[in-house]
Amino acid sequence: MGTLTDVSALIAGLPQLHANLWAVFRPVANKKDTEQLERYLELEDIRDRFYVALREFAKGLQVALGAATLYDVVPEAQIATYKRDLAFFHNLRSSVQQRYAETIQYAAYEQKIRKLMDRRPSPLRRRTGVKANPKAPEPTRGQEHGHGQQDGQRQRGACEPAG
Image (cartoon, rainbow, N blue to C red; front, side, top):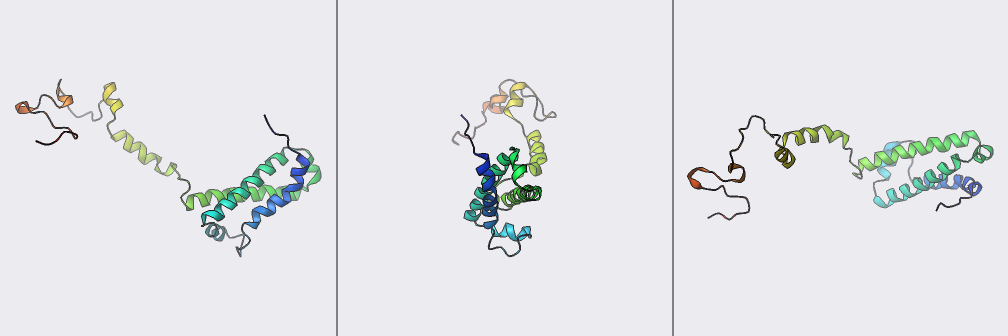
């Protein structure tokens, strides 16, 4: 069941949510300098405060933007500021998450992982009959499990004791 939201109260609360978001960065001298903002967010508890304030502002703005009354009550310039700041802080969050290793950009590693996976033999390939190394000779019956070695010796497995 969804919750009923008083949109007019939410719209009236937007300036406070916006101010709360900027208040996280009160100690930062130059709030237009992204590098300073990122450095300020180095401590995890400050980042957490930022994430909470951003989430609350984004959620409030999203609901408010869906209400026709927002455009009657709030000047267009202020709505544009809210949208611009939301985009700025979302980008800042993404940058900070990368900087402090909270997220990993897998796209940078994807090609290397694919190459590695293509080169390594997999159990699936063995079961389906696709050779991992097309130049390798096919094992004869018994050799695939270490049987049929010269002098009747079986190849020792990794878990078998030497002796």
